[in-house]
Image (cartoon, rainbow, N blue to C red):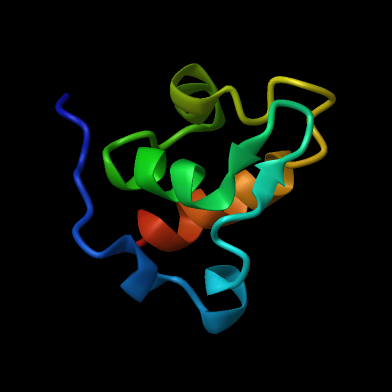
Length: 77
């Protein structure tokens, strides 16, 4: 199945998740929040797909819940 591309992913996020877009979401691998959002918007709808595209969650996993929340918001119907 072809990944779902999401147009304007920031429109789907609550205001609190739109903050600090240029800061690292994943500090272990220095992955910026906007890079994670862009990966999710381009079809990465699981933690593993986000990790494969960005390396986020590949360190100690402390950002996993944040990435899950972004996936929930961006890929919600």
